[in-house]
Length: 293
Image 1: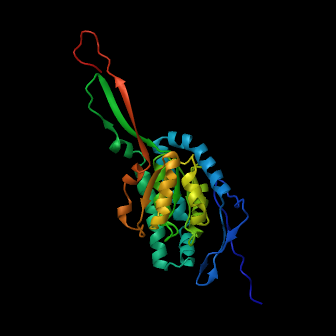
Image 2 (image 1 turned 120 degrees about the horizontal axis):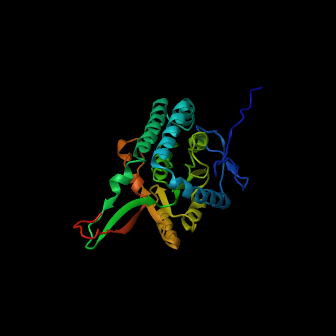
Image 3 (image 1 turned 45 degrees about the vertical axis):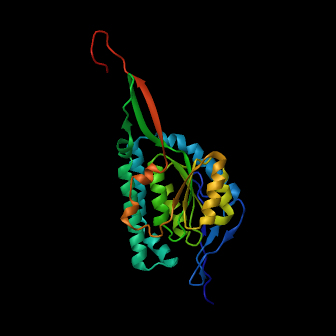
């Protein structure tokens, strides 16, 4: 008798832990007509739990030093490099050629290092000292938006995911990400990388499941501050934009399908999820002196 292969059950990632979906449901994506794994089909409750974890982690993560955030993103890249062969194999299982899979993993590693380098620089680039007609200093500085919900690109399993997560957390935000439904293996394995890379629990939360089922829950949750939509379905995007009015979420749309290109490495991706805080500080004049400090 031929051996029956034991398919791996890929769990979701919430608050630094790996629970099964509370719904008890799963699905089996296929490649070349063959099931490639047992994938959790996340529910509204799973999403709510992930948002709670993200909100709980956001304050401390946003307050970490830029240097420390940079160290952690670099550590993610190091661990991903060490598990490169596994990711290449999973991408091949999901339909990529070996050359495509190798390139996708290598670009993902390099992209993490790119954003690690920006952690302690973007505030300098986007801050400003503003001219005012009074005896004040006026400073504008970028600060994290908060909790970002993300619909990851459907077309690829790893580079699209990494390209969304890296700039979001580099900017001090936390996130809840819905992975590609058809190519979810690398997303769940990437959460195993996160769990061993000094990333505090709750900073990144990764769910798997059906986009249409979770779309309304992502866009209407009142403790989500912004939403990143990767895709080209204008009906979905319109529904998200209308639902986002509930608490004035910022909605960012990204329509590209090829995330391997260098053009997707930009500090503006960090700025997408930053708020500008302006502070006024009075200038104290020294009695008898002609200048203030």
